[in-house]
Image (tube, rainbow, N blue to C red; front, side):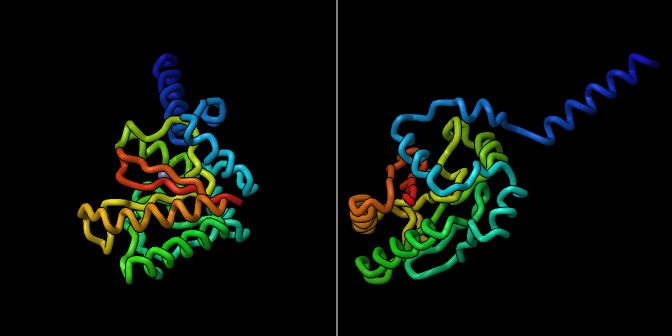
Length: 199
Ligand SMILES: [Zn+2]
């Protein structure tokens, strides 16, 4: 009887721990990220936002006005259904996203971009890793609210290779990077540009 009780207690507490956390923050903070992402993470740390652990932390930052919701449709962009991230960004990132989309729209004479990912809590990241084991290990700039992904295979809400529009997008991003507003990386596995806004 005693033994069964102990077993129940053990499995019970194991379940509580699993339900609480699917990540180890200390371990994540210690994990070295790929060098090309290092400057992205450094840029994230300039916004005075602590790594977003879960929906509760994210809600707190929304309530105190540090993270702001991004509308699913705007001039030159649309956000696709986000399954592993939330449509919120720090103000600077939101403004820069709007500027990028506006410039793209003007240069492409009215085309739209597709955003495929935005702000991820560590919980979102755990879920993402389950479906995509290639998802980066360690922390990501998406965990701080100043990064977003733009597809380079989906323009005007159509999945198709369009090298003309991709070129226009890449040139806009290069221009923004040159003026010190962003860092970006072309992520071939994800078919997107990973963009990090600088403070
Ligand atoms: Zn990304």
